Image 1 (cartoon, rainbow, N blue to C red):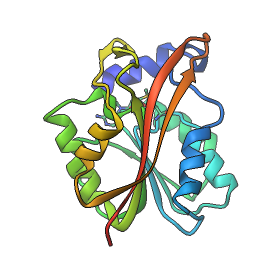
Image 2 (image 1 turned 180 degrees about the vertical axis):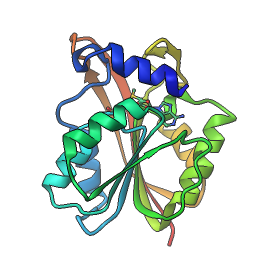
Image 3 (image 1 turned 135 degrees about the horizontal axis):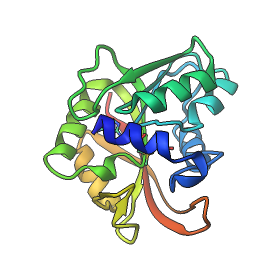
Length: 199
Ligand SMILES: C[S@@+](CC[C@H](N)C(=O)[O-])C[C@H]1O[C@@H](n2cnc3c(N)ncnc32)[C@H](O)[C@@H]1O
């Protein structure tokens, strides 16, 4: 899978990837809703070449980590950020063993590549990586969203499905439905949740 995604990043420019977005508007809005501040640590899983961490660096965040299965994407992200406040981790989120905890877990367009049992493994990693009282922002294809992405089948999630995956330990603070416009002007339906874990 790592080779697959490296190939996707090597062969498709930023305007040829459906998920590209210059400004991660909903992610930033939900971080604000959760009251996340620059003192908080954040991990963006399956970050790829997302601009989110660059926006957070501009907001003076100092403890940012991006994790991705693709080393090619991480190389580009590292080069783009050029910051000692950004750590990169090349790993599969379903098998990764975190060695520390984070205040915020962010995922845009990664969990939908997983169905059970990988989705359950994803939830286990999330649980291990998130600090008590920490929060999550997850945005994935909604039930009326695409059925595949980058040549891979996807699992579409409702807000209820996401809350169920997170489990009773989490309170859902906000939900959003959005229609992402791809670089070629088609629309993709996304479901977002922002949730906080009990302390
Ligand atoms: C659709 S892209 C989304 C990228 C980014 N989150 C964004 O919003 O621009 C999916 C990303 O997930 C990564 N990915 C896919 N499966 C993964 C896994 N099992 N573990 C970690 N990263 C994964 C891919 O390499 C790719 O960067």
